Length: 265
Length: 304
Image (cartoon, rainbow over all chains, first blue to last red; front, side, top):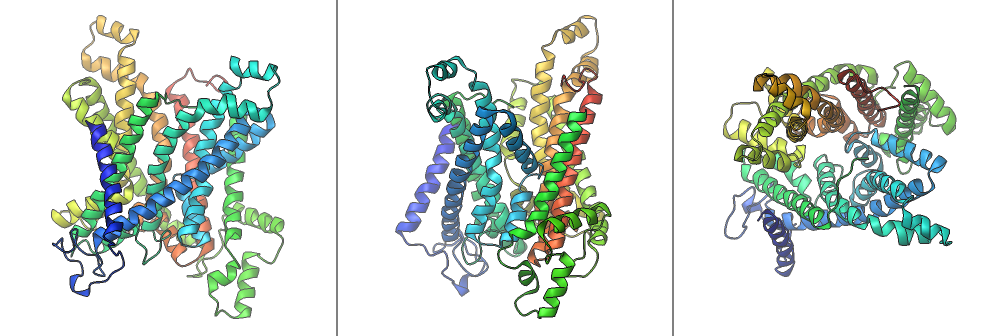
């Protein structure tokens, strides 16, 4: 029941984005007669402080947000898994050094480091993605390293080793495949967390810049005009909630289906 | 213990290095970025010398460390005041907010978790679990505006933002503490349910203790360990959350100082704030570790 709801919401947003494209909703079209208007027949979700359609901006924002989340997750997963494999497989000094580095990154709570990187790199879409990538690989590295460490001594790996398999073959054929379901689930959750991080940074003015739409920046504008136009912040807030809940619920159902045990390392 | 100490020192050193390197990540000339293109050559040279940017990276790092050892964070480029002064005025506000949020988190989360565990399987449990699982995923920059909308705009019983009245702290503290309370609810519930199946609980019941005594004196004590760990781990997101929360509610703490310094490209202040929050987090983690051992005398290092 909840699962259907989650997939339904995801499908709804996907459909909305496609339809928005089809009907060529313009997120930057300004209607000065409709500044901060409540929902109407023309603008289904009302207008923002410049009279732009909230609906069009939401749809544009979710596109950008998904783009950021997908690319950042791809980069961080690749890098993190590689580092984790190296550390877990070779152990010893390599492991020690790499884990010290991840420890330092983990010493910065939450998105603080991403904020710091975004601050020095300057605002903008690319810098935002760099900042999120620089900090996002750590969880993958930790996860992969822990798993690799235990998989390394499994019978089938030792068997392959004694038959003379090379290291890339050992890792690629005998260790990595056992990690895929875990990584897929992790990636789903990290999609949600990257979207949140992107929105947080944009909320702080460090991410996607005007006139481009971003849910984080819209929420900030919504707060600014909360007293005169509460519908703005409410609509953006509800949209954000539905999407994050749906992605997390989707992650849960994926986890159950792939039967991934949540292991603390 | 020594091993912990060494790893603590390396982490602190790593944090120092990383925050030091931040300023070198600025694309182009950081001095030009900070002062703007119109700044005179003389002004630039002064700032460059002040930040030590005309020296080698190694000696810059040495200078940075020795200044920090004297609690000298440098001078704000924007307001020309020593950063230590800024921190002295801002840090207590953040601490106040974080502590109240912690209080809310524990005060709401633990009782609610106990309640859910005692009602395990009933609709009350289901309701509490669903709400805590789902809403804990919601970020502060969502929760803050929503609380503001409900309590400050619609009900108009609390101030929208600022620090003018004593009740100003309520909404930001709720925003910060909410995530913690949701996670603690879940954790307390799980932990307590596990303990309730143990033999010593059956013994306690068998010897005729009241249910209240069984829960409070025996079960809760044993269930405390994971709860402490979670509180410690969550202090991190609490500290990071202050950046967003303080910005939403115009609460003049370290988090807001950080955001303001970024907007003004006041990099020394940015650097100091990042360092301070990260170090606070590291210290909290060490304290958690110690507390953890106090709560369970069985855990000695080497075993635990």
